[in-house]
Length: 338
Image 1 (cartoon, rainbow, N blue to C red):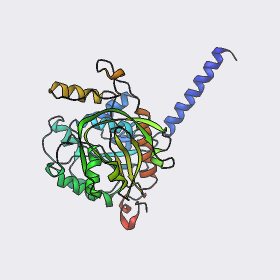
Image 2 (tube, rainbow, N blue to C red):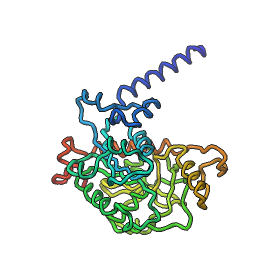
Image 3 (tube, rainbow, N blue to C red):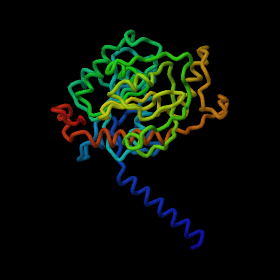
Image 4 (cartoon, rainbow, N blue to C red):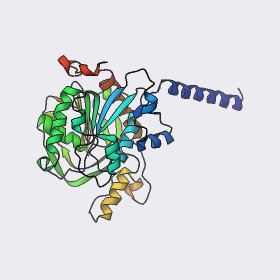
């Protein structure tokens, strides 16, 4: 076989694989004018707008995203990028915690694309994601929307098949559901840390390497001993430096991630530059810049496992566990694994 013919055969295989991906991959469904639609489409990510989805005769997964981050559009794009990397069609609803004015997100955007809890509390969802929030140094009782957050967490137990709590939301949920207290660190944990997979067979970490990386950015954490003493929880992955990373209940209905696998390549960079510009004494994010030199561009080494994690969650703990009839979630235990 000549070098040219071998190359042509290689291209034929690549074309076939691309066609198969396009054949079986399903998009997330989002509003036509949501900024994420344009961004993800430019990245060649399969996105289905609401107007096109009306012609689809399938039942998409319904996922509710409670966005607590200040820069909501940025967080929307990050998480929708993760949710799009799946052969499942996902219908995303955006939820705001209250109607206070945002300093970082236009009011028109919030009014157009976000729901209040009162508008969705009678719905049922296949999945719920609650993001982190820059509130690590604030006591839970002093968080202005704490009572509403507690209500949503409790509501999710009977209205959602599986809930994913990220970073600060994981700490908040562990407090609400199991009474675990967050612990303040002497120095902010910031950087990309090595983690070890502790189990082999759990679907959440299926396909994970024994060692993988994930970003963290927080002032507080959860004690490993406290988690181990809680019989309802399992630690699936942890870090010597960052502590427990991935935890879940036995039935997978609540999943807790203490880091930010959804972060883009420059998110930690932007946070570091923001803190420095404010005159804060913050450490350079560890293991993020080559040689920990902030003058060099960061290296991304967590994206593959981040995509795999979200795909595993959607497939094994949402799609395969949720009933076809949404109204059945929470009814007589349907959609809730024993």
